[in-house]
Image: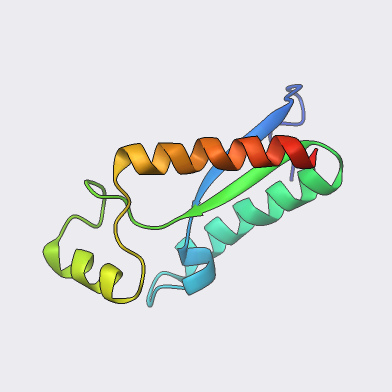
Length: 101
């Protein structure tokens, strides 16, 4: 599975979800799709191509805007990500990835 194989890319950043790790009830297909993104990034990285898949938690203003969801996320140790902080996290991860390749 190398959808980007025809395009020469120096690096790939994939945005996946913590659902691949936490497996939300009733969303096995969503969890599996996000796990596949991580596996694809691992495969590319092992082949010497820069790749990372970041398992994001829920973003404020996204699908988890309901107060009930927000409270449950925070209670479980996963507070909602706020846009600016998420971007800083992504940039940091990309910098770290460059050091590894």
